[in-house]
Amino acid sequence: MGEKIAQLAAVMEHLKPVVVFHLGPIPVTTTVVTTWVMMAVLVAIALVTTRGMRLLPRGWQHLPEMTVEFIYGFLEGFMGRRGRRYLPLVATLFIFILFLNLAWLIPGAKPPTMDLSTTLAFAVTTIIAVQILSVREVGLRRYIQTYTSHGLMLTPLNIIEELVKVISLSLRLFGNMFGEETVVTILFILVPLVVPAAIQLLGVLFGFIQAFIFTLLTISYLATRTSAHH
Image 1 (cartoon, rainbow, N blue to C red):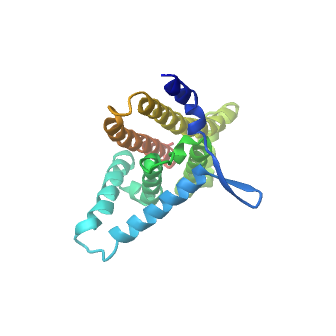
Image 2 (cartoon, rainbow, N blue to C red):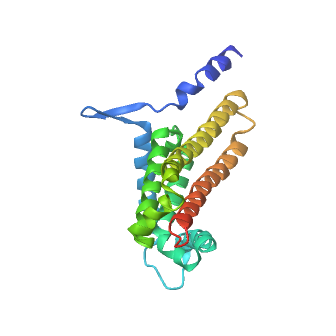
Image 3 (tube, rainbow, N blue to C red):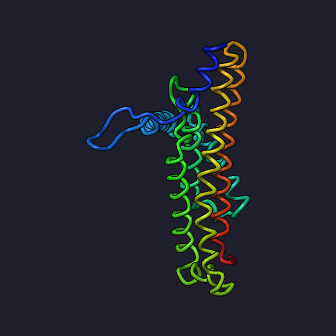
């Protein structure tokens, strides 16, 4: 019992990113290394599933086809046929975040999305991309009017609203992934012979749900900001 109490006390230290090595003065943490590993895995999967692509999918080609259809279904539901043009951005976010969430399946690895710097980078990139696509879709004049149309007094609040989206996106993904991994780690310590398989299945489902929520919010922001009637 005393050993388990000591292990529980060290849970938070276990979940923190650790410096693996340095590139000159720059520390490279487990977050960065795991992200590189998952990027390599994604590249390998992309090469395998897209080799010898056919008009009628066969074999592994069904995997990317189903993923694209899944994401496009939600884009079309929010934005109609014009949503197709945003498929590369949205699908990339979903796939990349999903694989990072599932990195804990690699022995000794921790999901990079448990690191606030990772989720913040995703959130900042997403909101900046939404602003750029909004300008391209409705024009610079109409884009500026979306902030000023309700009066100049409310313009700062409209700008703050966009900035808050960055905090909301990053903290939601970070908090959920960190909390889930904390619970999993504690359960592994307390009942290692009973729950591992069930927890792993729940972890896969939870990782999918968090990637899906981030993607769904991105689609919602895109639909709102790129609408000519916004």
